[in-house]
Structure formats: C-alpha cells, structure tokens
Image 1: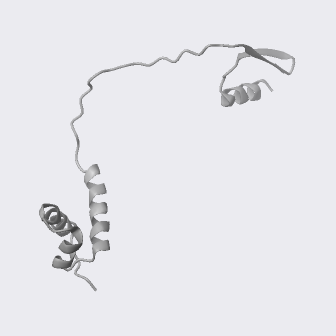
Image 2: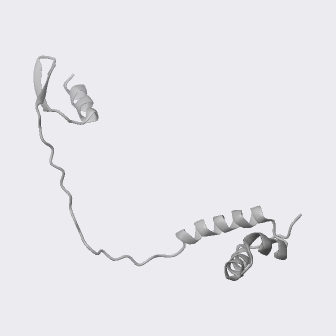
Image 3: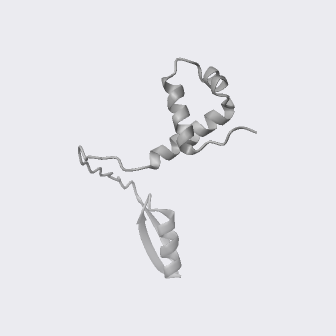
Length: 103
C-alpha cells in the first residue's frame, strides 16, 4: 500500500514535477509514486483549482443581437369553431399550450 498524501502534499509534488527536467514517469519513479495515481490526482486538483476563489471580469463591449424572422406564410388552425392564423415557425410548445387552453 502506498503513502497517503494530503491534497497540499499532492499539489507540492505536482508543482515539483512541473519545474523538474525529468519526464513525468521518471519523476514518479524517483518519488515512488504510482504514475496513474499521479495523473488522477493532478487532474482532480486542476478541476478544484478552477472553482476556488474569484476571477476579476470586465465587460469590454456590450452587444445585443436581434434575429429577424421573415414570415413566409401563416398556418391556419381550426379548433372548436375557432380559426387561428399563426405565423410559421411558432414554437410547438406554445401551440400545444394554446390549443389546450382553447379546448
């Protein structure tokens, strides 16, 4: 069974490996660390680093995009003697809710 290390000890090992001129495998052999454990811990610590603390962000440019929809025609629905003229491209969920409310 290998040595149990804290997250800080793993972080130190990973930093040492990054500054070392040795390959990762040679470094692991020198430090008596299982390479697959080393890579797994490195990946785990890199994930947690992303979520620690805050990063300063600045709005560089604010833009608003508008998407024009060109109506090519209307659909006509007849529901319980009510005739609806609806633009093509109307979301299906909206149509289903509308028809349900009229039924």
